[in-house]
Length: 215
Image (cartoon, rainbow, N blue to C red; front, side, top):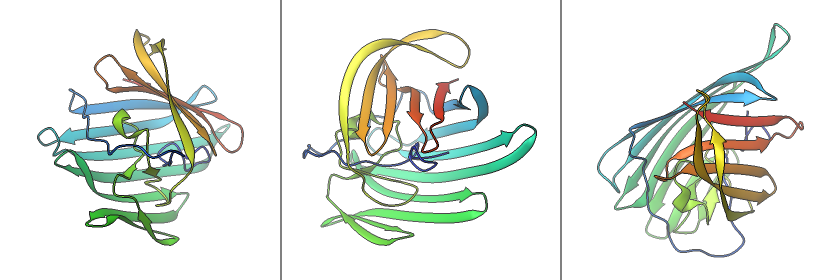
């Protein structure tokens, strides 16, 4: 279920103002796992694993979702990604997405002149500081960002908000800082005191609400 369409939860964004190049900020934990809800009903799980030294991270993502209409499955979604960072900068990304049987593949890599992104609509040349919006790294939110599922740049504005109470999947409440993305889509991410991704809320193109609660 994405981009606030079914494509933006993992999707990308480019803010309207230029920003300095961001560096990787991997969480202290080697794994982040979220339960995913649509209109309050659990529909799947989003898991990320981290390996490598600081600034040299490899991040692997696996997402599985199933939406039902009563007992009948109406939408199946799977997404896998491998994201690499080198010397604190985004280096490459490979993703495969299966939405109800439709397969989409994206490859992106840093070059001497910027970031080259190959997706279903062809090749996109992004600025040198571009990175995928995979949500775990709040340092990239000032952008520019690209959609890791479709391989295209989007225009959103990122704003850092207040520290708020966030409820995790097990019912515990923690303090986390909100980062909002506004424009073509509406996405709110929260990050805990250590900087690790803690929660997400957004609105899908059909008007339904999507929510991530960290385990």
